[in-house]
Image (cartoon, rainbow, N blue to C red; front, side, top):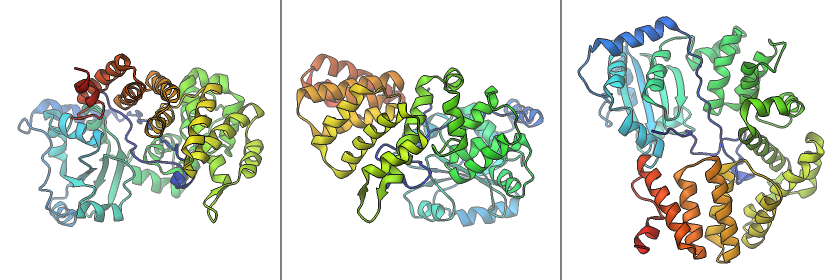
Length: 426
């Protein structure tokens, strides 16, 4: 099965929903697992069969978090909370394919009091007012007093989910302990590495910037594979010293991360920062001159025009000028390469929803095809299917619709919009 990024929301360093239509997040699993005794303990649980063969036993959802804390206090047991939504594809996948597994239940039922909270319920709203919920599914671990110990996001395979549970009991891996140690100035380089990846995953961008800088300050060579991972994870702005370092060593980073991943992040950072610099909240609009001035101050000349072109596409979308937006977007992607599948699919979808011109629809389908090459998800396949269908190319529409339906069903999605294409062409 395929596990995708946890991010359902825009995760820019500020609230970019006001200034950037194309904000996306990046997801990186922390694989720094070196607690041998902890893992051996976990493996012994898996082999011992101490519990009956069943998945995670969750408490009745009518029981409040406060009541669970009282129960935990009496039993001195850690509380595990997962926050979910029934409309979240990743949440459904975890509930159907991971939580019911005997291996998962053996660990979580032995070690934790387990609670599921639906994000839109009264208890979910109350929980989110106390503890950040930026992506779904979200996982929290609390001590017997209700104090948070650990926090992570995102769907993952059973073995990674079990490791998360085991690590949540170890202060060396607990997010809130690592954060406290950092704030006290007591972190080792290894702890800074772990905290960097956790802060990136959780969207704690203010902390991320400080932690990754603190780690790199302990390193004499930023171009080792491990240090390049840390540097790349900590990139949140084109104003950072680390971003300028990356631009000076593009060849090395290209080799390490690949062209697609590297330039998808560079393009997103450029658009986010230029948009934020040019946004006028009083006028609820953008200042093109300010945008260019900012871009020229922080970007090499070769990147300025591409960034300004994409900025204008974003500006027109925010203004609701769909005719100019579509023409400008098509012209931009005819001129410049894009490695961001989310952006490409977003543009293609907007063309689908706002154009009846056959040539524009086929251009949109081409963008969706490029997105498929970069990130072969059912959403991109569906966009391509709908665009080809609207443009009158039934054969290609049916091909992409079949792929979209097959991929969606494997992901636990029961119905897709392009199903109508298959039904109408039978």
